[in-house]
Image 1 (tube, rainbow, N blue to C red):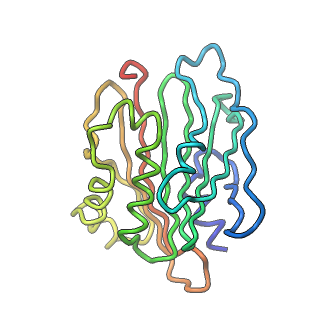
Image 2 (image 1 turned 90 degrees about the horizontal axis):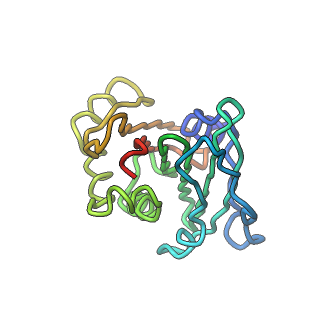
Length: 207
């Protein structure tokens, strides 16, 4: 039950169920044959980063999927990374007039450990939006600092599920925003005990 709860919460804005890559040793994951077509009204393009993600340390299996948002008709691309230690990282792009990027770490630990944060950061660093706008930022240090921040601790005291705005990524254009989301579950029978997400919205004029 936690799989659905954590994944749906972390990616609930899309209204689409999460697709999980095959477990290690099973059949190779499917490849996204073609990214969803970008409408002419959307100035920001979109493409899977599957090839770059497959080259990350730990050699994750990567499943790429794409569709159009049923409400906005905006193209969405999701890359799901499965690592051999039970960690999953989900990267989702939804671009049109602004670029939207979310990176979620689904962890078997109640609080993400350094290894999980490093994998989440590596996936974040491979994404086009991060390369274009935040290349000089240390993604791993940023994520670790959020977990250790007073804001995270204060929200965590109030409950296992929360979202707050972070100023760790200074806005470069009007409408830029970064959010941290977290959800934890103590059910040890579940494959994922926590979900940690960084969501970024970036205005097109900064591209």
